[in-house]
Image (cartoon, rainbow, N blue to C red; front, top):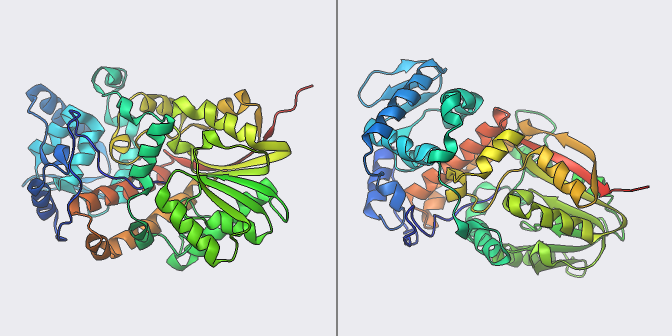
Length: 440
């Protein structure tokens, strides 16, 4: 999973200014007012799209009808709330429906960032919406999605140069920011708990349990030559080195490389772990084991063949590949991959969550066979809940680091949105073992 910088351009391709450091504010309307104070940082949040009465009316009718039958408590402006369940409290209905009518789910997310709606249970609200995603828009209109949804910007393409820029927006923001909500292992992927719901204090051990399962799956032990694609902040490399493995781990994030190297040196494993600033396509050498944790989501569909060729090319005879990957249903992946979304605009530029079918197909074409595939979505939902709660508890620390209210609302929405994806089973997380395909 990844943390975004705001877009470098607005919806029209104009340059956007960097985020200013703004004082924290308590309520949604204050956050919206602060967003108005700096239109250059968040141009598409501050300025709702130009009125398109037909689109706005259609959104009001379609979205209003869908919301009326869902288990939600909906309030539009000063109207009394209707229904029961998690709340959707729309402070500015005209702006809310105008954004959705013009930009769909991008508009829905930007409306939250602008403080135009709130909920007393954000992950609960989003779980209801994710569970009924096929009911929100009538089937005939879903088939017309390509006619109104924007294509992903070419600037997000994961060429070698583009991947560096996308990673910069993900990870080169602030190690201190990640430290506000991650546990002391600085592990930014799903944990594996012994019991659910998870206790906050259980997270470090659950992250180590996840890492150890992956290392076991890959057969990592004394003397193993291990390649890790996607360093994170180095915890997996540290666990592998403690087993006696020699580790090469690659990342495109200068911030991650610096902290991972420091952690490796502090642990006394500098002779066993080599943290390289390197694209996976430029990896050379053969390894007994390859591990990659939640890296494939940032690769982009056009480069999945290259990613799996890199995995296969790095394997020594008899080697094993252990992957942890977020997945979504295949048809939804195909629809999502063709369009620009709130996530691709603000969170994962250039990325796409694959389906299990896409993983199996691309692996097979590269000469790899899937011999184990386990899922544990409930554990990711709990991991995200713990991160979200810690992020909320430390909002003052986040503000002191220089992140304005709009950024914080964006991040709150992203964590809750991701949690809802796993709770609704719209998303899953898989642990896979790949080996060389043997041919007669």
